[in-house]
Length: 422
View 1 (cartoon, rainbow, N blue to C red):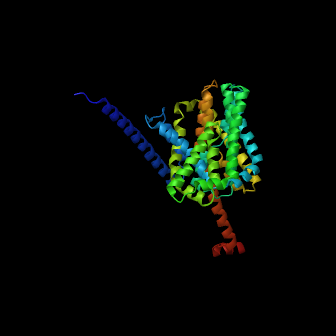
View 2 (spheres, rainbow, N blue to C red):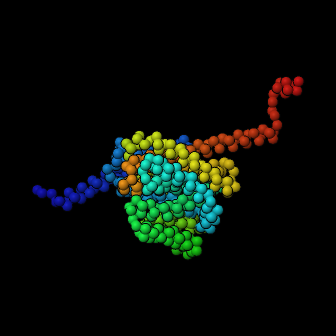
């Protein structure tokens, strides 16, 4: 008796779906365990998620045979949600004022952190196009990682956070101009095509700012709903539409999502933030996992020394540029240090740049160097933030104890007082 082929096909599809569910279940459960370990020791889970990505990648010891497409899309959604949540915390007016104030600091950030990458590429003989590409890798901080760190550490209300966000938005806006130019250089496009791509990207950014600044109430009315489910779907849908549209135009999806959050205010922003927070945490974990998935561990040893040296140099230059920005904003030395250290992690944009360069005639070592460099700072950055926070907390406690001791006076034993008086 011959079995129906349709039954076989249905059974095969069911087996494939079951395999996908098993792998995704294992991934989520494993990430949950890593998150539990991180929070148990008061650390950010981001570095652990990145290392897990190395293990689950195609070249890792536990490669994923299925579910990669879901993780790919989920990672993009995670990056959008991270920036959307940050945008909900601030108004467009505050952001524009901050970016204007930080314009000189943004230019200092650009010069200090792009120069080391360009210099290394030229010294290695990779040519001017590779120099432009590596300059972008070393310049731009990871908005996703920084946003996650700010949320994990509860720094959203700190005085230095608007300074950090202003510099991040400045960098993302710079990427909106930089990426079309880099793409044209890598593909050898003519000046007309490059100029057209750049104008389209700039037009998208300007349009996004115009809507966020001029028509915030209209957007809020469109989004409003007394039903939580409807509000969640509207806000998330608008953010994904804006991010996708920006991505199609070679603009910054991160900036687009951030501006959607800025366009909402008042009770709508508060309600949307509360509803989006669990989704943000879920997809943010996929975002960092996917980042690790794209790195081949076998390429790390060959370029590890050079990548480590470049990471140290640009970590210092990020701290310097953050200190400069904090000083212009009249922050205390501790606040200036927080700004600089918060900007150390590199991430999504750097990997995008490395991916673009890897598909062209740029030196084959470029991709490995960029990936290893980003991995080092994506792990070391969050750890540096946590260590600095612990040191600042310890210093603050010592200062408080010292003030109390001066206020209350000495409490020496009688014998010691007699020795001094004698």
